[in-house]
Image (cartoon, rainbow, N blue to C red; front, side, top):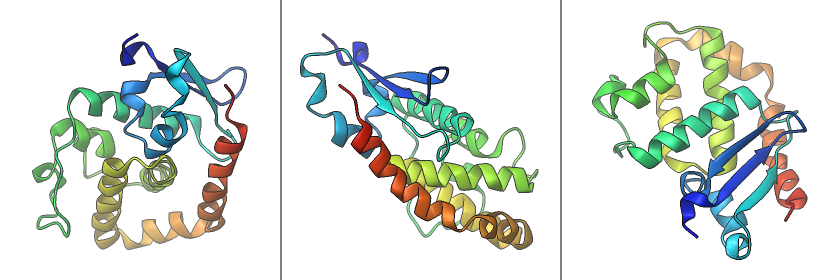
Length: 175
């Protein structure tokens, strides 16, 4: 049995689930820690995810990151960064992953998505994505203070709620 045949199923409810090869998903420290020994007798492991605490659309974007990272790992970069041009730090795919088609179109919606990416990557322990999103937040903060403040001050309690989500996955893990 090869590792690419081993599947992690992130299950939100009866209608939303994401099947990800374990080889891709193990970039997540949480997945690695929870499932390290689970695949001895099975090819598939289900991890319930609370839809109220994790946005499935943003989660899907994180899955895309995992898949691409497996094929082409993001270039590691040193912090503090020496350039405000993120394209000097990482490959084009990753620049587009965070900025979309243009790195000039910064809206409150873009910042909200970035905020959710930070929370999910922190929760899952995807260190390269967390580092990258935090660097982008730092750049945006210097350039767009008003948008950042509006987005991050809206739901300060979400950070605490997201940390509690760790208990939901680990306590509800099914075999």
